[in-house]
Length: 126
Image: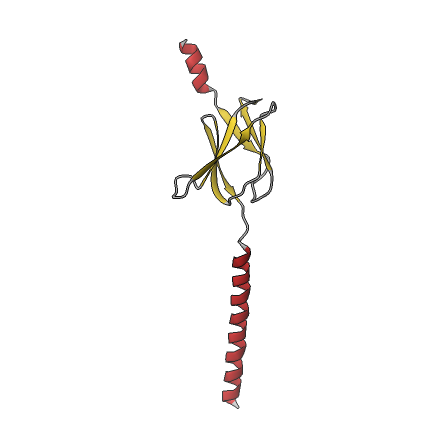
């Protein structure tokens, strides 16, 4: 009985991703135990672990090859959990469109102000 408990505590799942996760791009999560795929393992993702607004989502149950497909919907730090094993990842994301529009508008206004200032300076010298 003690040997069984010891064996159970020594075997841990390993979580491997096929590539760096990116926002809205599918990635395969592989769960294995000492190199053997773990079928039927529930895989969960916690977005913003330990922070206010932390959310947890079950992304699926591993297939016979220990794989589950995941398409991240939130960028930033996340923690993938299968059984007692965890794997922390950073999900690459894009800046929202509104951020790019604000950046472009600010840049154009800045360039306009610079050109206007240079024109005034040139008129003063005349």
